[in-house]
Amino acid sequence: MVVLMYGIMKKHPACGGFRQEQSCTIFKDNVLSAKFIVNSIRFPKINHKIISLCSREGEILLILSFIMKRFPVHLRSLVVLLWLLKPAFATASPAYTLKHHSMEDTFSTKACSKCIILVDQSLPAVDIIAAETEKLVWQWRPGPDVGIPAKDVHLFSNPDDAKPVYGGQYLLLNASGGGVALVRLADKQAVFYAYAGQNPHSSELLPDGNIVTASSNDNRLVLFHVDTTAEKVDKKIVPLPFAHNVVWDKKRQLLWSAARDKLYALRYNFQCSSPDLVPVDSIQLPGTDAHDLFPVFGKDLLWLTTVDGTYQVDPAHRTVRAVRWKYSRNIKSVSSGPEGFPVIVILPKEQWWTDEISDRDGHRIFRQPGMKIYKARWLLPNRFSYGDETMLKVCGK
Image (cartoon, rainbow, N blue to C red; front, side, top):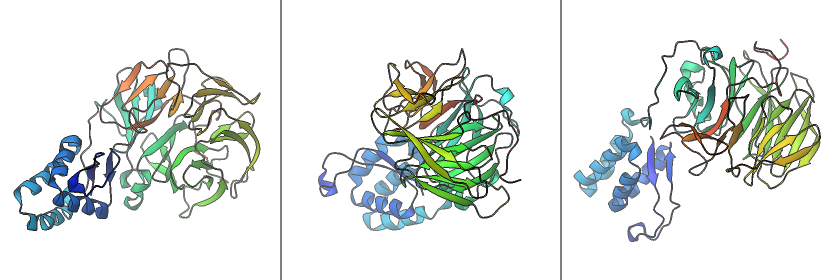
């Protein structure tokens, strides 16, 4: 049951002096939903404020309003309980509708001359949009029809990164719900997925077909032995405080991962059935809370973002240089391309998301009200990390 709740910052006598942060939060737990509804029944004045401020979930909240207005106090709990059990209201309607190109059952990156991959936490979904028309050309949402069983759909709540791999034939994506998946663009099928940990922020494809993820809440990298036919997924945990990103460096045969105020270089053992990583070097970073790490298109450099600024890292000389943009602080993602492709960034409007993609000077590239965009990447080859391989690799086969 999805219920949208608005917390009131000011003390209110009906709340018994209870204070909450001012925010809209989505709960997908019937117990939390029931607690909220019980409080709603006791304090109807607050409910009308909730309904007016969070009208985006109007279908659900208007029913709450109807119950509170039309039913006596002693019957409200019973009516709400019956409503909670009604399957028709198991999920909320999408907050927006994007214009679509006609999408076939198959998709090819050849159809995209200038496309952007974005992760949208409002649905949740991973989208590919045509930058010049701002139209949706491809969308992935977790479910049994794309290889994610219903019991594991929750792993892909709040998607937080997606990058093209295997020559743009697949997307490697991860979500704060704990999931990582390798998805084939042509038919949207997840050929591999697993649980990566608490709040995985990034994932990377290794040369032998294995996958590594970075999880910030449980402070670790996780190496996955990728076998698309095995029922059990083997993995190796490598501790790394506040791990937020992972990028493979093809030239130096290293994995880079920035955490807090250091950029770590790790050596991969290339033992596909028992993978491991060993730290071999680190670079001191300016500021703290490193966030995004991604190759600069066409150069032997890396983009790095922190709460304090945006930087270019030179892995050959182990140097870090700040960029001077109009907006460079607290950038969630940065992506560049060849001539004619502006550097695109995600600068949060709300707590950690936005409804638009802009260039480094703040000019809008794409906007869709209702979206919660967390990261965006140009759909382009990544020569820093990968070669020309387009066929899926299964470790040891």
